[in-house]
Length: 116
Image (cartoon, rainbow, N blue to C red; front, side):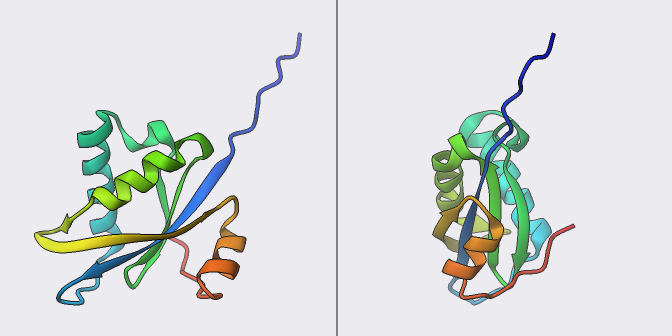
């Protein structure tokens, strides 16, 4: 007997971090904040919703999530107000089904390096 499994659909959310002192944050600082806020807001690990920081460079990033959790991902990003005691505001630019179209349409071709 064969059971069909639906493929997981993802959404990619582009965002920019704004801070008063124009500090540039590292990928690891952002990952730590995403994990901490996910635990505080949803009382679960970020893997539950498929949150993964796929690309991050010079305070611009792309967060991956499951397609049904897009609103939670946007709420999570906008709820982050401090990174390492520095006040920040995070602006979500757009969401898309593919990284390629997100970069082409909304980041003006600004290709962020892949996070590893």
